[in-house]
Length: 303
Image (tube, rainbow, N blue to C red):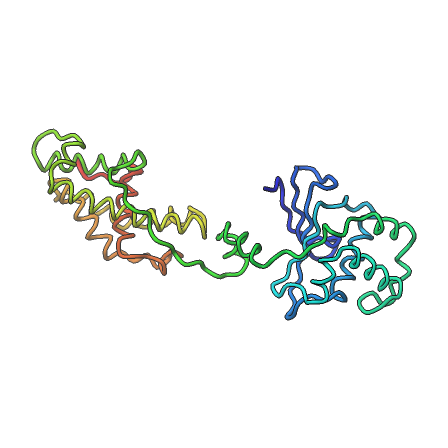
């Protein structure tokens, strides 16, 4: 939706906690201003009006052009009084001007700032563009980027269901499925195509059980990507590779089946305490990482 988003806040923010542009440059009517307030109760006019005054002073100063929308964001939302005013823009404008002129609560001692030039800008401004940002919208936006949500709040999302195993292997599975096909070919003592493997019950059942492991680890990969970035899953793969490669490459193995079994046996006892993914591991994840490594060409069963 936005071409650029900048988190500001703090000294010098000009009343913008977030500046979200619809186009790369800052153009009038082509950006949204987000003002965030974290209060224990709903925001009142006396809470909001000083921020609104700051906003108009910045418009007059030329700090930024008028936004498309001024969005007020708060976990407790706005209180009843401000809610009613936001629904009636003309009344909001008039009360804001009256309270600033009189220097009432929230604007005490600031009436001198309401110069004719500032008043002209306020009179011309469309107050219907000032609105509350609904909490449900904020939550939906956070859900779009679980990694940033975790980074900001430290709340780890639940791991969802792992992807279902497709009925037949996909292109993305080609490398590790090819390794298994070669294993079956070696076991049968004759050339076998993948179609022939799928048509022989014992090999089909073996293949499907190992494809299910691959998709367990695929679910972990997706969880890692959404929360920490895919790099954490790759770090886990490196740990697994270091841990199982000596067993897989043992000189005593005479067949691909022995190497595969050695890898799965070795990974079952592997300690990956340094991985941030450890608390979210499921029984099929570590065995499935062996097939991910085979899919990357880092493990092979048939020599």
